[in-house]
Length: 269
Image (cartoon, rainbow, N blue to C red; front, side, top):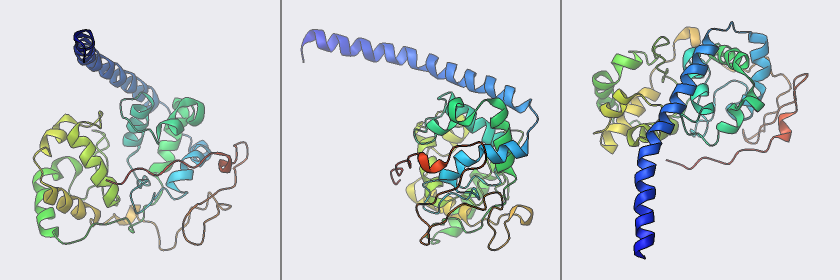
């Protein structure tokens, strides 16, 4: 490498280090501003049902995602958490290349649509048939959960709406593993710094154990879907016999999601 090229590389590195925090701060401020605007609105569940059609392509009509963790269970998630995550993704305060195109105003709509779909999703009943871990270290996982997680996520894993701490009960094991890695490494920019610090020293065994424990926590009766439940708001949704490649008929006034190309699979953790 020539001396001139080396100097340029050093300058780019220094400038990037100086600019990046500013860009990150601006993204967080934009997200916080939109969050405050959204939560001040009154949700319209009927409109939320219509907006959710774009979400159902990946998260399925019930909001249960997929047990392999490619798509998380979002049914029953706290409304404030859904709004925060959508605002963060839209502002690029949380990097999610798969979700970003579906979250932008041109597709999802403005603040009213966000509060509407968040309210709708938060009222969907949850499945207890989430993807789970190996079940070999549950005693250790339970101890770690009490020591490190219960203060914020709660004894039942239901989260905290006021603090915008997500519910993690009923979530898929591979998805939890992926997010745990992203938070610990700093790749998930909107993570709570306290959590990043809290989990920094976890070994792979500890991580697997505590997240396996989380996946086996019981969904509360009031949030649990009845056996065999299917979302009645999507009566024309076509489910493949093998549970893959689902499609849906469009609701009035909305384009048929079959015209939307299927997103690529996320890399496995």
